[in-house]
Image (cartoon, rainbow, N blue to C red; front, side, top):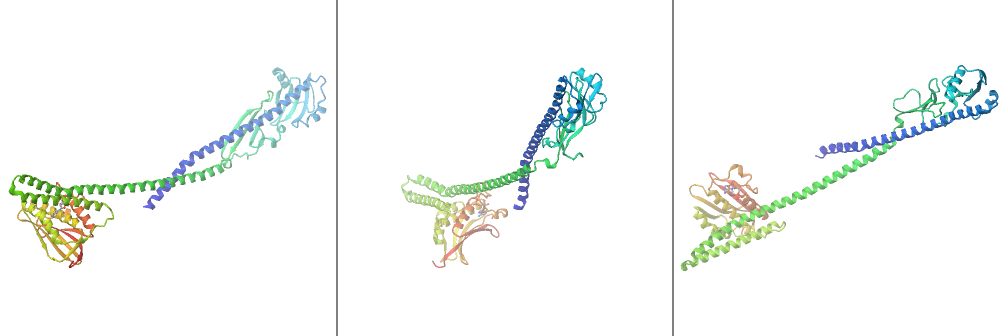
Length: 483
Ligand code: ADP
């Protein structure tokens, strides 16, 4: 049983763990990704601000140069500016169609100056992916190298790939991940630089690889959720155990209750007979009361009633003792003859009126069974009553024979009748409480007899007689052959 239950419990625990682990793990992953993206977005913004500040600086330099009344000589100016502006490769100015600069005249500069004048601000003239001229309306122009704007090491650490397009295609400013796209999840941000004259598109991206996932957090949660699932399973198991125990206690209580119910019904059953007898005798006495001559009969009837009432009281106290679990039944050597005499006294006449002859045969007059007299009386009463019930519709001479004999170390009482016998299907169930084949029967008589016999270390068996009739045998320990 256990081995069949265990895998099921394990599967349930595993499913519970999955149900615990998955949603929180997904939340951890999502949260981690959101954090990572947030940091990446902020660092990209920092890079964009750093680049924007540099390019705005170019505008300031051009504005200063334009404001000078005596333009300095570009070749001389360049070395003094370069230490603070390593991105500055050259400079010069175009005035009245004449170019004065540290480099040769750049192609297209005249058109660019014209364009800048129209815009009223500096414009760019790209040279290649990295270099561009920034041309002011004044004619002053700076040759700049975007690659030198910011040293790669100065970019925030969470950035991986960064390009800037100065006009001739993207220039890689940062390549911390291998360019060959490894499989993974990309996060990217596109932003133009903030300088009005140099709004170069900037692109920053990063590929999240397996190494970027929050393995440590997942592992910690897996362990914690394992612990949770295991303790929950243990808790459930102990709860199920507790419920099972409660159920067992309830069952035991129910069994006791039903035994109690049986007892109550049994008491009613047992008392029915003496009470009916008392009623009949008192009624007869009442009828004869006025007749002086019948006085002795009235006395006898009243005495018999008193006897029956005592029997009823005995039955009740006997029952009470039986309910007490460990009360040993008071046992003594019983005289079978005396027992039979009292039974005959009580039942003989009444049975005779119903055409049934009750006889007592003692095959071993000296032998004494060990038992409780009241319980014994009750058992024999019941067996005689059952026999009488079986004989109710039997044809011919009806007879019940009560006999006593010694069989080995046991004393045997048997009650035989010449009625129809026990139906074969009933034989195995006779002693079950509530088993009956009679319409008015309660099925408690034999169950009670067996309980009473058991309390005296005795036992009752039933068999059919040949050619007809039933025989119930009660075996009791022998008190001693000549007690
Ligand atoms: P009940 O009082 O309802 O008859 P018992 O426990 O006394 O219940 O008996 C159970 C059944 O045993 C009876 O219904 C009957 O079928 C059978 N039985 C008992 N005594 C005899 C008998 N002497 N002859 C035939 N059947 C009997």
